[in-house]
Amino acid sequence: MSILIVDDTKSIRSLIEFFLQFRGYKPILHAESGEQALEMLGIDDPQAKGNGITLIFLDVVMPGMSGIETCKRIRQAAHLAAIPVIMITSDLTPQTIEAVFEAGANEVVPKPLNKTTLLDKTAAVLGN
Image (cartoon, rainbow, N blue to C red; front, side, top):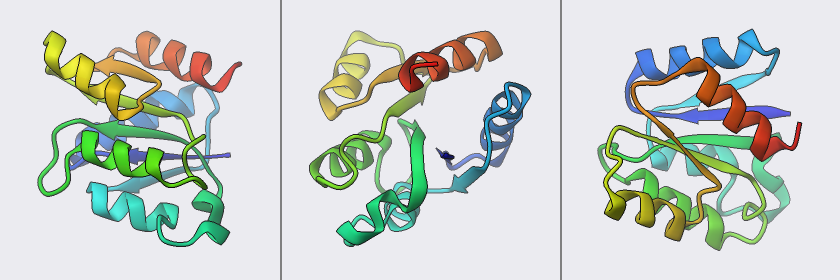
């Protein structure tokens, strides 16, 4: 099982990784953009089957491709559609939350990040 953390801010990626490693989740992979995440997942290669990634943390607001657009692209790729996606955002307006779930996210974790919330939602989407 590999977890992919996609956020344009290194400190956020590091904090999520720290929380996940606290609970024993690893290996952890990092991407700085939606485009990089799609490449790591093998978006154009059904044989890649997500390259072993079994969970994705995805920031909503990033330069270039937004997290919402990235999530939509993941859901449109049959070989990636079953990978759970947890979106992370500081924008908790009803419009953003609705857009996140319409894009196909399984869960939302608010910023600032809380270790208990992040780990509880991780366990819930992974079924453990």
